[in-house]
Amino acid sequence: MAQLVHVGQWAEAARRAVEQGATKVSAATLVHNLARACEAPVYREYVGAVPLDGRITDQKRRGRKGRYNIEYWVRCRKCAPCRRARARYWAALMQTELAAAVRSWMWTLTLHPDYRHLLVSRSMLRLEHGGTVWEHLSEDQQFAELVADLYREVQRAFKRLRKAGHLVRYVAIAEPHKDGFPHLHVLVHEHGKPFAEDEKGHATALEREWKCGFSYTKLICERDPGTRRPKGPPVGRNHPCSDTLGKVSRYVAKYLAKTLGCRIRASQGYGKPERLSKYVLNNIVGKRGPT
Ligand SMILES: [Zn+2]
Image 1: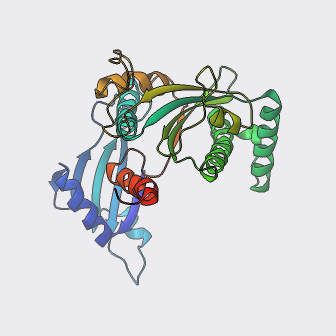
Image 2 (image 1 turned 30 degrees about the horizontal axis):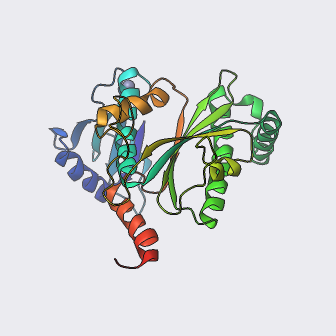
Image 3 (image 1 turned 30 degrees about the vertical axis):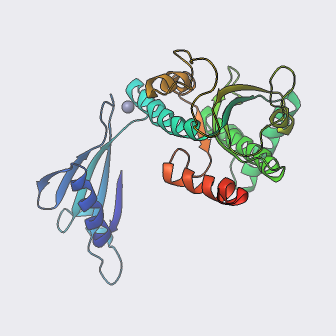
């Protein structure tokens, strides 16, 4: 697969690629291996062409002459090493968020049978407007459609929570049940007003906001608001609050690495320290005033 761009844009990409370790194999060709441990790397071409009359011509696309190329080898995202790498990547982001939040919850969401029907018919209707027939989609595509719809419900739930004064950040992982229907694991990071709990320690505010079926919450990490050190007795080996990346990794890898079809959605700038500190400053320190 080749992407054709203006030669100026290509030069910028080439400069970055060289910085990141791409090899120059000829005057106009770079090879950049981004596949790491992947077992089935995928080949991509990034082609720069000189525009003729302001347009990038098809001739330049086909011919070898005047063609600048970066040959990329990228991850397949399907093999075991790729899935492990993806789990590690998200685990690192989660660890950053876990360390910054006062409390973090695992929120598991499932769908009521009635809602499943609604979800499917809504997706069918939406596709029909675009001229696509539901039955013509692959299982994976159908799952993606259902999940996209479901994530909108999750976003609505978080909108209502924010309106109620809760400052939360989250990452949601959609996983297929055996019957192909999605269920969600959401990691919710609490920054502001704490969620009310029932006598069993479930966050009732969260559970109330899931309108499409059943949900279950579990407090997985609690920290001292001042020092952000984990509270309570020393945490166990596989506990997400343990401050080692490998431990968080094992915890989330359970959801991420084993499933091929799982999809992830997260708050803006999830796990990015600069975005996180801005969020904390704007929403929490800003409201309390300087201390
Ligand atoms: Zn791979």
